[in-house]
Image (cartoon, rainbow, N blue to C red; front, side, top):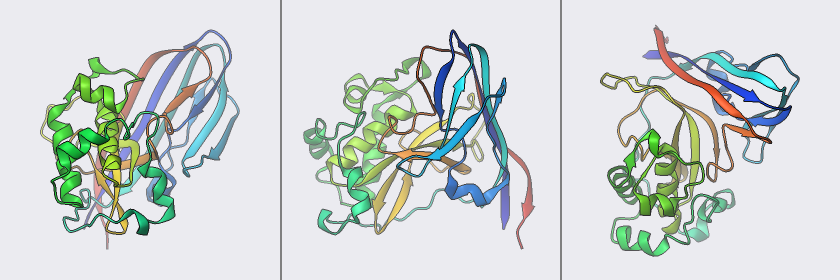
Amino acid sequence: MSVFRLHLGCSLAYELTQPTPMILLLNVHYSRAGDLERPDLLRTDPSVPIENYRDGFGNWCTRLVAPAGHFTVRTDGIIRDAGRSDPVGHDAMQHPIEVLPAETLAYLLPSRYCESDVLSDTAWALFGNTVPGWSRVQAICDYVHSYVEFGYQHSRPTRTASETHSERRGVCRDFAHLAIAFCRSLNIPTRYCTGYVSDIGQAPPYPPMDFAAWIEVYLGGRWWTFDPRNNDVRFGRVLIARGRDAADVPLTHSFGRHTLSDFRVWIDQLPATASP
């Protein structure tokens, strides 16, 4: 079986007027740590002390104080990937709430960007007659993918799911938030994910690479990946963090004013190797 080798990483440059504490979620998720051929260690320029910890969702976080002036953070690693697309389970069923595992229940509730309570009537009007389970989630992703116009010029960090639905535009996190809100409104545990999605298997020309957002839903006793922004077959998906919505897993959180002067993300396929 062919195995992908993916060169991935990012570089973010800031201009700061004063020393500024930051929390960064930029490293590959611990669930993929065993696949790292070369760890994507976080480095800073200038070098500063860093502290790592796990948040309440198990994500790997970096804490530091960036000095005033020009400051850069960078990751760069190589990860081995099985070369398979996102798993599909057309028969995956929706569970009654009373039998859901306790750890999934938090992902049924409204959150900062996913106001499932506000969108509940809309969700039931749109999807109440769909078949519960995989088909219902796919119907939600189909709707969000076609209903919302994608464009980086539409980016706004405070946009909520209900605002995305009324404005009909956004970036990948907005697609994810709207799909999450609809799923939760229909009693399907759903969580927000961020990470890398490669262009492997896609037709050129390729757009500039960026971090991506997608969702995971709990059906048939496990979590499944859905991607309302792309809504197609994707290879080389690498998780960084997951939570209730983007408020839980910002890639960078700055406790002070800053200017982002440069932002680059890469995930490129390297020559493949063959597994035994």
